[in-house]
Image 1 (tube, rainbow, N blue to C red):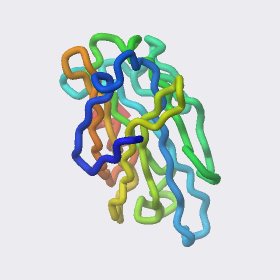
Image 2 (image 1 turned 90 degrees about the horizontal axis):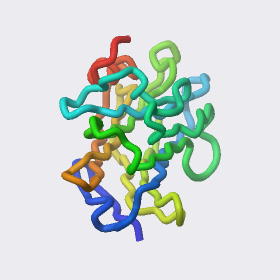
Image 3 (image 1 turned 180 degrees about the vertical axis):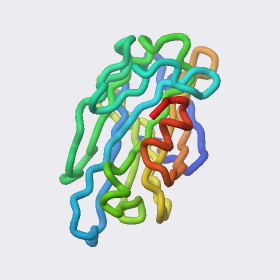
Image 4 (image 1 turned 120 degrees about the vertical axis):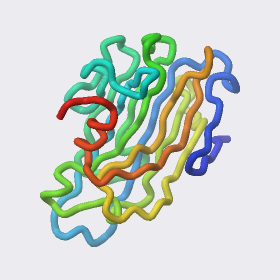
Length: 192
């Protein structure tokens, strides 16, 4: 039975699941019926952060054009350009045992590609969620349904994994950004 989280709630991941190292982060969303006539393309991104909350190396910014972290611990499985269909729209595979020791947090974002040019925002997106699955069994361990009513935001940090001593925990974030992927990158210390 998955643990369902509310915004800001934190939950232990590895302590309550001994031996868990390989997980899948599933991200999903639906686009509302009225979209202004232009296709939506939402993208997931992963930021591997140092203890100061910054990406220490550009290669620790994982997305469809940089699908794997240097240490091999994080792998983006590919870009879903339409979001159509049931289940996760995009997935990230993580081997917690391989995450470099300098990485304190792994943050997950969803952005709208060309949101400004297409006049799109998260007010036109519904049913957005992030979930954590046990890769070996496929069991859903944690789920956070965003349920937020975003209006002008073009990017959302949905959640993060973070180290707490030798264990990993998950934090349901749900924070929106108006400056899309560029805004997220700047906040996480990347030059855009």
